[in-house]
Length: 199
Image 1 (cartoon, rainbow, N blue to C red):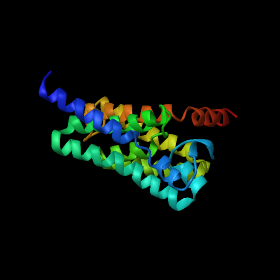
Image 2 (image 1 turned 90 degrees about the horizontal axis):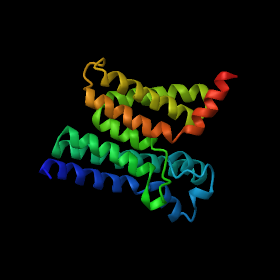
Image 3 (image 1 turned 45 degrees about the horizontal axis):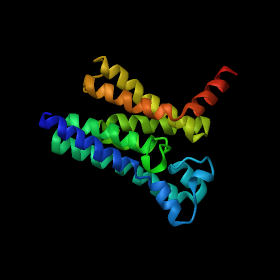
Image 4 (image 1 turned 135 degrees about the vertical axis):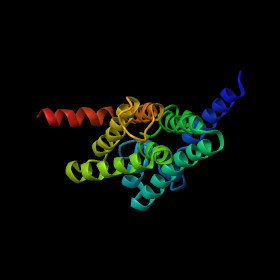
């Protein structure tokens, strides 16, 4: 196997395992709580804030963003852009399908933002602005998260088609893939939102 493929494989494995480490579960455990049986049951920042308190939710949010941002940026710096894209997608997959949580990890929003922030900061900021505006209207974190993620997907799809200046085709495809993973974990929010839209 070529050395570059070995590097990419190692990057993917390390990033996946880093993503699988769930800060929300760890923080909750130190406080004697189990997020999987509290609130929404999701081991993520939003549920941590709901069950443990706002400051703990913010801490989990920062840790989730950082655990995706750092390996994505480091892989890109050390081994090139392709390695960075591999690391970013792998860390999000690790978070969502954590083997340490029997495949039932978080929904991946904060991790996706961290990974995108390392690769395309402007897109990450646009997604956050979309989230903020959506939340001001719908007042539901899950649905606002979906709309923010769809902003990433829109840039990704158009970028993959070569229609976004400064966003390469591979990067666009990567953005779409990352967004797709997150949206797939928000199926219930999508159905609820669509039901309300249809009236």
